[in-house]
Amino acid sequence: MMAVLVVAVAVQRNLFSVVVLTGIYSFLMASVLVALDAVDVAMTEASVGAGISTVLLLGALYLVRADEAKPMHRPLLPLLVSVGVGAALVYGTLGLPAFSDPSAPIHTHVAPRYLNDALRETGVPNVVTAVLASYRGYDTLGETTVVFTAGVGVVALLRRRRRRGGGGE
Amino acid sequence: MKNDLVLRVVAKLFTPFVLLFALYVQFHGELGPGGGFQAGVIVAAAVILYAIVFGLPAARRLVPDAIVESMMAIGVLIYAGVGVAGLLLGGAYLDYFVLDRDPVHGQERGIFWVEIGVAITVSSVMLKIFAMFASRGHDPDE
Amino acid sequence: MGHYAYFVAIFLMVAGLYVTVARGNLVKKLIGLSIFQTSVYLLYIAPGKLIGATAPIVAPQYATYSNPLPHVLILTAIVVGVATLALGLALVVRIREAYGTVEEDQILAEDERRDADA
Image (tube, rainbow over all chains, first blue to last red; front, side):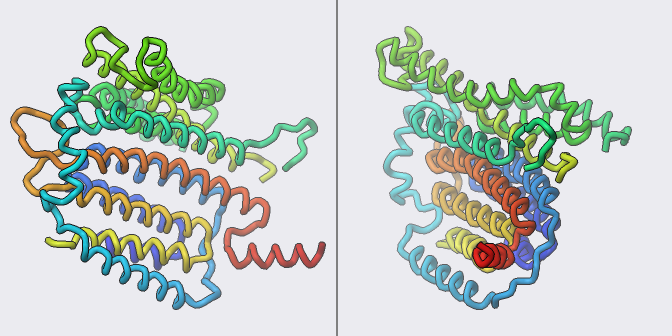
């Protein structure tokens, strides 16, 4: 179903329907994430991906007001490149551990320590919150700063300079 | 959309509950799914709903620009301030164990303030971004 | 199951890459990039899942949990992703105001025309 949606996004030229389709896509992605036990991430994806980014895309579309033009060059070369990359990646995954393998490296190194000690050390049962705010606090400080910087960037790009005399840009 | 009665009533009814839900997500984030990032986005979504239905000027009266802009920075400063507080109390930067006599309580306190900082920054940045995009289109010289 | 989850992620990634590379419309390119990004979410989250495990919220009645570390990384990545998407859209809006179009070909043609004039 997600595959169908993505193909629809790729084919559709009316940008408005593309934006609506990406909203649906985000909701589907959120439900897949719930199935994968990532409830925190799913919540974020549902509110951010389906909510805020759809609103932002619609706002930008309102300003841009355009349908997509027919591409002038042939799509054959990009298609070849993409399929080539995909084939290389599929070849790469063959060396990875199988899905839900408890002995995979990802489950044997840092995670058990977080899962066993987080409640005792921080008093917070939600391990994701504990790791986010405490063990990897520097990380999150950096991310918050990035969000702040992006906000400042948008303000700098879109703010109208108030000039006396009503002159345009 | 300003004249649609159903929309106006529903939006007015919904906004406080969405804000309440955001607070729940924020403060319950230590026990269940949720936290500063999600709560911030939900707060922003509530105000954006209000702005879409009642128009941007109404939302600007509700949450003035100066407050939103200063909150963008205040969130980061709260986060960084928690780190500095750890330093002043004799620990390392962003070390929460020293924030209370009981290290576990110190951790809880640190996480609480850090999440609040995250929520403030995220919500105000999202709001500001939306306001920038929305106000851009309404200018007559466009 | 095997490697099925990886293949889904790869398909989404390739689709996003194709949209980004093949389409000339800048808004469409940004949407392609965000699809690319969601495929990375899947690539991170899927290996952390253990069948029979539950979400990583510690409670006495559960013994096995899925890996919380990828969740943390992706959680912040999503929020940063939307912030950067907004920054990209702001750039697109400015480009549209400067050139009157958001199609790559037309922007390039306009650039060449201006260079010729100068």
